[in-house]
Amino acid sequence: MELLDYFDSEEKCIKHAQEKRWGDHITCPHCQHDKIYTFSDGRRFKCAKCRKQFTVCIGTMFEDSKVPLRKWFTAIYLLTSHKKGISSYQLAKDIGVRQRTAWFLMQRIRHQFGIDDPANGKQLDGRIEADETFVGGKNKNRHWDKKVKNSQGRSFKDKTPVLGLLQEQITETIERPGKVIPDKIVKEKIIHSHSIIKCKISATTSEQNLFQHTTKHTAKNATFISDEWGGYGFAHLYYNHIIIDHSRGQYVTPDGDTTNALEGAWQQLKLSITGIYHKVSRKHLQRYVDEFTFRYNTRHMREDERVNHVLSLNGGSLKYRDLIKNGNG
Image (tube, rainbow, N blue to C red; front, side):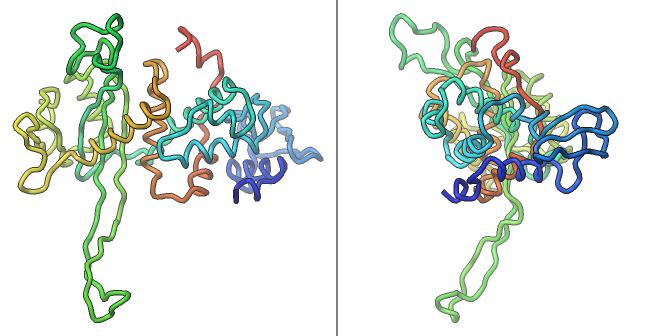
């Protein structure tokens, strides 16, 4: 309600989008020139160099969209603030558009999530948890004539692997006087940095794919924690590799090493897909994974900070023809 009360007109939304994109210094999205003429309506601009006209929507998720920015802002808020996401059918009802429009709008927002780098371009460092999960239906839940043979375990016939890396949070426990009883000493955990996660769908969980994903996003000499899967055989060559042997019922080492944080994150991803979206095709799965990753990495932000963060991202415009090419997905 605060968002709708504040952005009570399209003009306010446009001004806010301009501020988040350019600040006080407008540049041309076509040639990056900084000498700009402003039209009297305050919405349109013209570059003094390339002579092209533009608005704040050019080159963003709002480009060529007939949906008012007020509805866009509401959609961004709903998609990022709901813990498990929101379906396109529900969003269509909430903002008053067709379901097809709501779905395309949400995919454009997820496209921005895909270019957001939680480590600001740096590799993950410190203590890193690694694990994979498989997204897809279970044979026991299928009708008898739709069951897939030999699809148990790590089969890729009806499931898509998602590779994940989690940089553990850094905390410190301090002792301080109690707020209610000053004479009582209490312990408090201080979080210096929150855990962040990087996820990517993959064709297989082979050692080659795991090697490429891990070495790209993990700094050398980091403490690397994984299960006993043989695909991580390379890890001891680059990292301080700690193996949690799940096959023997081990989930925490005597030193407290575990992959439970990442496995808990996988549970959140699965609940989002099964509870809200019900079914996600392989073609679009990466965008839903990007949505989950973005929501996890920004969970410590306030809702207004998260919306402004999305508005500050500039991953370009996703065209509908590019979204649906190579099949309907």
